[in-house]
Length: 265
Image (tube, rainbow, N blue to C red; front, side, top):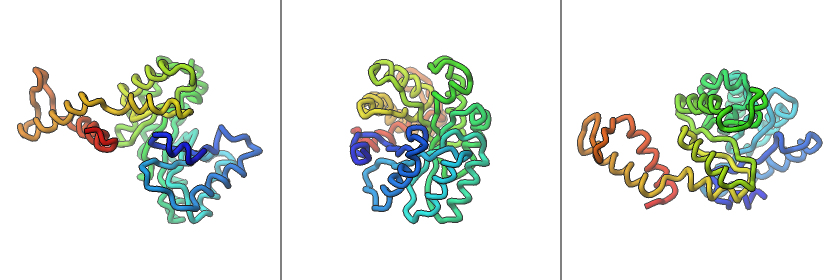
């Protein structure tokens, strides 16, 4: 499944060791997951991540021990159910002592984690992204797992990620037969500030890529705004009758960077 996932058109492939693995299969899954990285990985633009178990349980501790033991660690680890920044600092220290350059992706899916999300986001220079875990968060908050009830929690995670200049990824849409619903939720997530949205099946990837990839009109507008500011050398410009201030340039450069990454002309 790993090679197929890498060829699916996604930006990230996450190998699962946590909730998707039964306790009796944890050891075997851990061994097989880490064995994937014993051979050099292709430079194909797809990020490889292993989601380990919570650092507060014995399976998570065993995962960390295995990562520290190997000479070929995964490029990145995804940490579930994070509650405090101390967890991240502890793991960062261990990885640093071992000499592993492993990066970190943090799932915010507990009420405690949501409360401390700003401190968590800044707790390590290894962190590349925050992930919003909506299913567990809904259970923690005793609310319905739907867009409106989780809007505050989502917004708080986006705010923290933006403050720390991190990517932020929304929870996967679990109804595989409701593609229209997934696209609607992905569009809402994009407009709220999310960088992307997780997927649980390859058939979701094409639609998600479409939602989060700027179209030709957005790219052309971004390039025009950048060029206009460069020529004007001022803090604001007027384009098509609309006043545009210089702080929007950061978003325009992000749009152009995405376009260049995916080779949009």
